[in-house]
Length: 309
Image 1 (cartoon, rainbow, N blue to C red):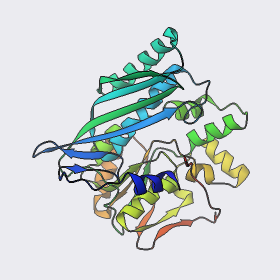
Image 2: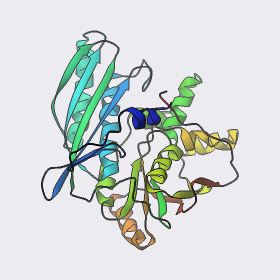
Image 3: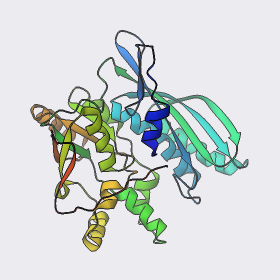
């Protein structure tokens, strides 16, 4: 049983509150008045699982908040506040100062306020719960992709996965790759701008294909993607040329970019967003009627994304 099957079997309860939309998207949605919904999500990072043991306190703090902000971005929600549950193996004042300063810096950058939390002793882990606001019934969902939509991703894909792969191979990654792995840039501005323009959206945390599959299953559609159109950094391009293996780009994860679908009639509006935000948005394929993902480009190997179980 994998992580998603576990959630579906044991924790996907149908609640009786009509103002709550729960499991199934990057955030849950809670209606608070006639105009607004809260978007809320929680993620946990554990030492040795989500970050190597020698990762700096500043990088851990940044990533812990950034991955949660990325969930808000995927829903088109504006960040408002967060709580922090911090488990520490010991009291280390210099570590805590570095962690706190980095967390505060990113929180200030996205105007999100720390409002509470919990501290305990044990294996180093960080759990952050974020809450944002989106106009009622305007949130970006995974379940709204339509046949004929164009599939887009933001920026480049695979650099974080390549950094981790190099660490695991005892190869020192470049500073650029390490930055992509340790300090992802949540696409909050893009997510908010996509409201009313994108049909479906998700953040790329577990790998492009696996996360795109979540959209396809929730929307009851398929996809055809072109490998040559997937935006790659120079080092990832070199890795693929040498290895002839696309799996890090397709299934590596930790990108925290957005993958979304847009109807053809909204492409001109999307172009303006790209120009206004000065961001790279790449069309990588189309939403189709056929189940699953069809790759165009001659790479047929099955790529396995990370699974907790």
